[in-house]
Length: 383
Image 1 (tube, rainbow, N blue to C red):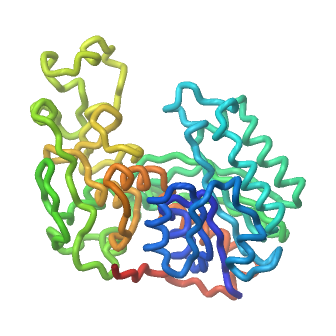
Image 2: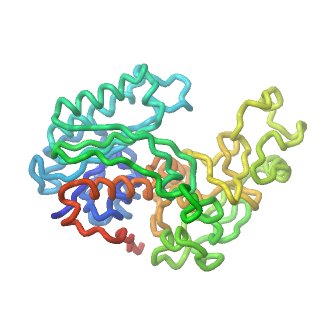
Image 3: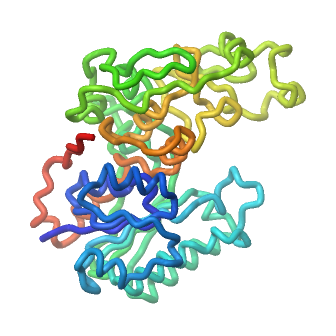
């Protein structure tokens, strides 16, 4: 049986990549961001990339692009924009125009009738508007004939070297059980969490503002994660360190692994932070710990936002390092200006997490025995 997927709000394709690795044929990706769609097209050459607002997309258009008829799609996946629900948005709530975009996902479910639905979002969706969006999503899917449940998943539990919490809505209309997502990493000593250093230690050493170009790896792959991320890649791309001013370089010299703005001498602090409480801004000017997990990768690797300083180099993370911490394969090339590349990486669902969701769907579904998914499908893109 051919396993098919369509990805709404696909961004750079983190969900698509995970489902492809699990054996799904990703047919279409839809997103309004032109740079993200460029990335999606390059990294999913067998799929159709549609750059269009979701309001302008219909199920009939998707069926025309794919040749599928109503009810034939295996899984509709998607992560409606989360800015309206994010805790980083202090005006978040259902009044935000972006908060209703999930209804277009539901509209396409109604028209397309996929066997399975998978929707991902930030945990803030559970509290914004007293959880109105969660209630509406579950209620509407139930009306459409879908059994659905929600799971709050921790990315690190599934082999992603990053603290990241997301809610997944998973449902089907084929009377299959809903998967239970049991952690596969960090449960015992046999399979510990993947650490920051596990993820990025083989990448080339570079200085502040330096562009590594298409350079060779610093070392041989030293663990299973690095081998998986490399695939058949021979060189490293998207490995450019943002250029920081001298004042930030002076500040970073005082920050040890696991340290933050609290380690910076008072005279060197930004003016606004001189008035901050020691309990405030816990992630700002944070330096990652080699043996720990990364903080959540955001849409900027900005000192003022998060813990994004390299463990032992005085610079912030490159796009490639951020992508590794999100579990994107090294052959994944991010298109557009560098600021947009960071946005694409930060907005994405980690492919390793998405793959686990897809594999669990295959495990519980009645057609999983026919799928014969023994090994993840490797990305073989050559640009």
